Amino acid sequence: MALETWKLLRVTFAVRAVQILISVASHTLLGDYDTSTMLLYPEEAAGGGSGFCDALRVLATTFDHWDSVHLMGVAEHGYVYEHNHAFYPAVPFVASWISKLGAGGCDDRTVLIVGCLLLNNLLFSGAVVVMHFLSLKVLRSE
Image (cartoon, rainbow, N blue to C red; front, side, top):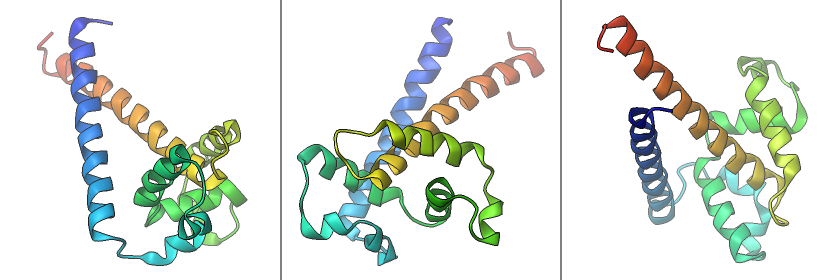
C-alpha cells in the first residue's frame, strides 16, 4: 500500500478511537437512556468476572442500544420476527462467527458486540480508502 493510504488509515483509526472513547466516557458518566439493555447483562449487576471481561462488557453495553439490539438478536437467534428482516444477513452471520471464537471466558453477547464493533470499524476504514481512491479518480487528482 502507498504511504498515502497508510496515513489515511492512521487518521481513520484515530478518529474512530476518539469516537469510541467519547462514547464510553459519556456512557460511563451519564448512564443509559434506555436501561432495558441491562437485562441482557446479568453479570454486570453482580459485578463478577475478570477485569478483561469487565472492560469488554463496559464497551459492549455502551454500544448495545437501538438497532444493535435487533442486529444481535438476528445473530443470536436468526430471523424470528418480521422486523428482523430489515437487517441483511452478512453482518449477523459474521458477528455470530466471531462470537464463536470466544474471548477468554467472557459471555457470548459481550464478545458478539465487541466483534461487531471491530468489524464495523474495519469495514468503515475500507470504505474510507475506497472512497478516497474513487474521489481521486473521478476528480482526476491522481
